[in-house]
Amino acid sequence: MADWLMLLIAATAGSVVSLVGGVYLLYGKRGARTLQRFAVPFAAGALLAAAFLDLLPEALEHGDAAQILLYALIGLVLFFVLERSLSWFHHHHDDEKTTHTAGRRTVSLIVIGDTVHNLIDGMAIGASFLVDPAIGFVTTLAIAAHEIPQEIGDFGLMLSKGMPKRKVLIVNLVSALATIVGAVLVYGFGDSLGISESLLLAVTAGFFIYIASSDIIPTIHAEPKRKAASIQTLVLILGIVIVGVAAQSAHQLIPHEEHATDTHHVE
Image (cartoon, rainbow, N blue to C red; front, top):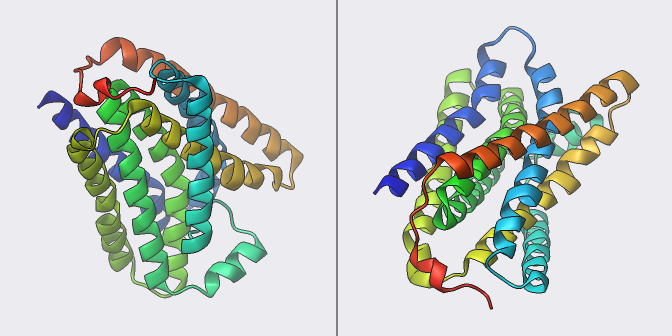
């Protein structure tokens, strides 16, 4: 019961925190785009730190190294294929090409894509909690950091389509609930499916590495101003340090109850 409570708290908090940037864009006078500009590299650092400093090391404790790396690769390729198939967009920066492409998309497609993305995020959170609540909280932190700049983009696109502020907020709140649904589904049924811990962690790590390397880091390279690019690099490193420290602290502070999946390790 304690783990269930922690899962619900983390998934709900992660959903709410992810909307902070978008809400600020709606009601703040200035600075939302600046927040997005520097939240992007922090998100990249957070995702990479969660993948390499927490998820993969934990997976390697439960399975063969070659298989773990294969699962991570499969996760990376899987999310690439899904993103290409569903035409998801991670609106981390506003250049002419991005704005023109996104401009052809209807609000419905934006909402559907964001909802599916939130569902996948929730599944990653649920899978991590299924292994260890400490890993779950680190995963939630990394996902929330990633969602803040994306939600700014989503809010901005909906506003550009003429959607009223109140409706934009309601639509995104409802979409964010998919994170909780995804987390509950995986956490609730993961034990009965007998999925190995190493598979769950490695695939999630592959997801994080893909998002950071293919979607976020290129936006940092695209920064035309050298001073701003240097600051973004420092922010990326800061994201790695903060999430790395958070991962170590979480494992020391959060108790772990053994789950049935512990008996399904990869040999």
